[in-house]
Structure formats: C-alpha cells, structure tokens
Length: 123
Image (cartoon, rainbow, N blue to C red; front, top):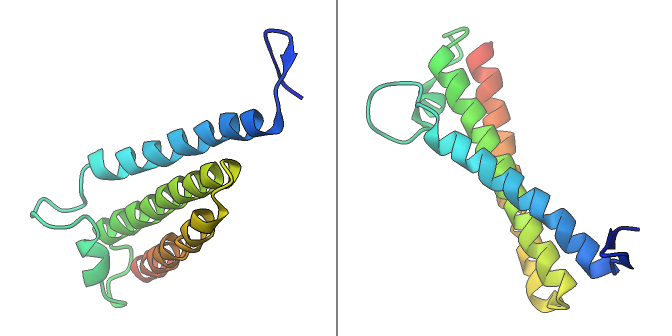
C-alpha cells in the first residue's frame, strides 16, 4: 500500500494515481501519431496510404507506416477511454462508466483494421 506524508493511501487515491499513467500514455501515443510525419507528402488523412494499398505491392513502406499510425492511434484512444471509465467508476458514476467502457469497442476495431492493413502492406 502506498503512503503520502506517512499516511496510507486509500484505494480510490491509488487507482486515480495509476490512471494518470494511462492518461499520459494515451495522450503520448496520440501526439506521436498526429505529430509524426505522414507517409506521403500529399495532403489528406494519415491513414489514406494504408487504405489504398493492394495485395500486389509487397513491402509498401508508406502503407506500413500509415497502418502503424492507425494501430498507435487505436491504442492511445483505448487508454484514454479506459482511464475515463475508471475515473467515472471510482467516483461511483457507474451509469455513465459502463457506456464509456463499451466505447472501447471502437479502438479495438481500429486495432483490428490497422493490423489487417499492416499485414496487407507487408505481404
């Protein structure tokens, strides 16, 4: 059990302390995705090269980079949704926390799509 000023932390404070790591990690991954240069110099969405790749192009580097950004974006979004749901659950707002936890389906689908496009760009 953790201590602050020689006083034991209660369970809620420990959870909120651990949630900070999730929030920082999630924002860090989102910043990496949004600040890192895109795979192609043409304007557009960062995931466009992954969507436009075909099975005939082996080791399509712009599509690989784009699909990695999709995967990192999905993981970052998952961490932020997880931390929001955890904070709501700690503050006893379970009626709101449960729908927030169900929102984690969206980044999971993004992770699956990013993984598919990653494999498609590699093979």
